[in-house]
Amino acid sequence: MRTLTALGEQFEAKRIVKTVDSIIGYSDQTEVFAFRGVSDFSTFEIDGEYDEPTPDISQEVDLLKQQLAESKAENQRLAAESNANQLALMELHMLVLSVVSTDEG
Image (tube, rainbow, N blue to C red; front, top):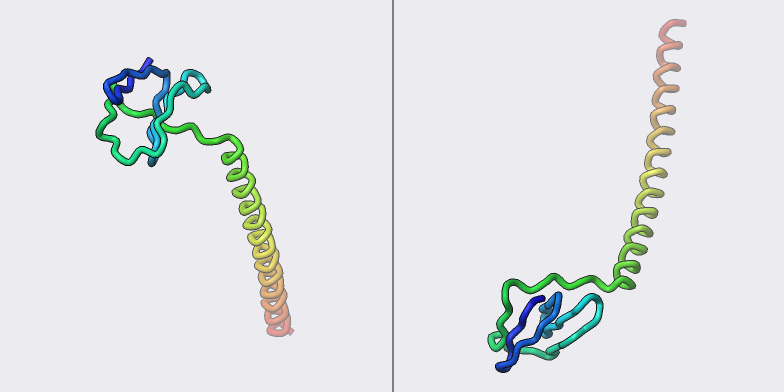
């Protein structure tokens, strides 16, 4: 258990997370205490370091969906570019063959 001292009282939780304007204590996934709208963190003391916030699963899923869509779009762009490069290479090859065959004849 972690301990946070605030306003002369001690608060215990398994995880204590500090955000931009809050300190929240969790035991498992349950919030056991919260100080929101904090502008002065100097009145809070913790026995060690604050824990990293756990990302909201729905936000994480949305972010991953966005990244997947961007990756698919980039993959399609690269595939089209690759096809164009292959066509250009084939045309160049045909041009070289036509030059070589006219020189021989």
